[in-house]
Each structure stands twice: as C-alpha cells, then as structure tokens.
Image 1 (cartoon, rainbow, N blue to C red):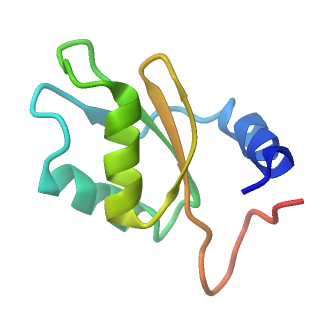
Image 2 (image 1 turned 120 degrees about the horizontal axis):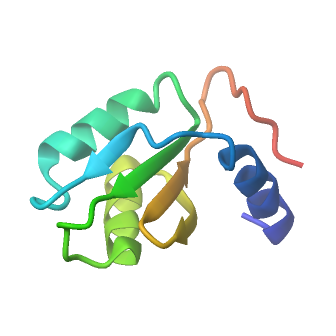
Length: 95
C-alpha cells in the first residue's frame, strides 16, 4: 500500500465510529471471528482498545490484521483502522 493510498483511507476513516472494542481479554478467537464477519459488509473498520487492555495497540493491530488477512491503515493512541477490499465488489477504489 502506498502512502497516497494510506492517506486516502485515513481520510475516510476519520468519520467512522469504532465498531469493535478490544478489552481486558485482548485478542480472543471470538473477537477475530466477529471482525472477520464484519469484513463481509465493511471494507474499512475502526477498532477501539479499552483502557483496561494492557497490550500494545500496535501489536494488537498486527495480530488482528494477520488473522483476518487485512492491512493496518493506522494506529493512533488506542484506535486501530483496518482495511480489506471486497474481492467481488470493492466499494472503496484506491487512487
């Protein structure tokens, strides 16, 4: 992913609300499965890491991205943005 594409996705993610929260249990198989299922309807997902989770948000983002075959767009503070294009009908066209 180029820096121009990353900047484009960041601009789209600014208006998104987090649809998942990672809590004290950190990354569980259930969380990964739920995120995987949400990629069927969304291409860009924002995840919030709660204060009671003591793992590094960057490491959490890398683990989730690896397990869901997505790409980390950005990690700012305790917010993670992931992107995975839809194989059949992509809604977001990268520049």
